Amino acid sequence: MTLLVTAATGHLGRLVVTALLDRGIAASDIVAGVRTPEKAADLAARGVRVVQLDYSRPQTLAPALEGVHRVLLISGTDADRVAGHRDVIAAATAAGVERLVYTSAPRVDEIDYALGADHLATERAIAASGLSATILRNNWYTENYLDAVARAADTGEIVAAAGDARVASASRRDYAEAAAVALTTDDLAGRTLEVGGDAAWTYDELAAAASEVLGRPVAYTAVSVEQLTAGLQAAGLDAGTAAFVAGIDEAIARGALGQTDGSLSRIIGRPTTPLEDALRQALAAR
Figure 1 (cartoon, rainbow, N blue to C red):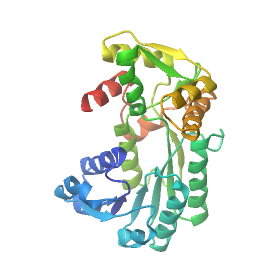
Figure 2: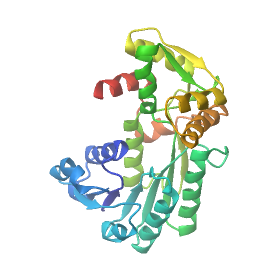
Figure 3: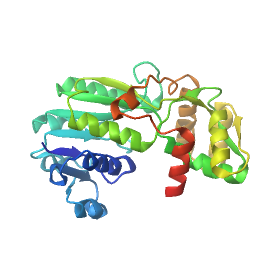
Figure 4: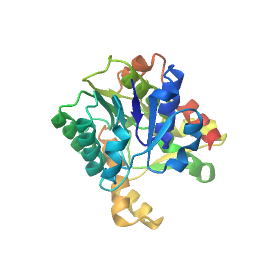
């Protein structure tokens, strides 16, 4: 069975390839789809077949999917990501791929937020394609907070407009292992799962974890969405990007990331990585 991992040179994609190898999948059965093959020399050196696959260049899709049985579609980062996702879905359907696994976002059918809208559109495109699919609605990556923690080393504060909301984050490695399970077994076929860390933490708890990791006091400073937007613009972001980023905090405040039911730990067969441990490991790897 040949398994294709898209965006394989990204943070998550590389970890998925490693997770597949750790599960005993032969390197020759793994295809790394990448935008720039030269950046995947390390994967090729491990025996993984590297192919060019660029969401924004549809002509690269059919050759990359040739002979592939299952595909992990890691969500893109381009402004028009949905169009790229739809092209991959169409190419996978034409290639006769037997299963598609997609990394979506939390609660996209329950809470309206800008980031979630693209993922919901992709989920609907997958459903309309008729492909057998597994949708992994990944909660936040703990690594998303590395910049905030790094700034706190100087400022002593983490600033956010998330109020007293909770976040059930997990490490990228945790999510990568779940993707590997979805690709290599039939256990999750046809399912849409909300997956996240075992414990949902508050931003006060994030600040406390940052204090332990940094070895200095860190406090959470709660601000309004308007204050955060203005602060981001003052830091150099354009108005649209600032509003988008602040809108994510607003969605977090409405509970977008607060749910957890242990699904991720059950999938990967171990507890998810605790907040402080994940931050410490990620900062050490920087």
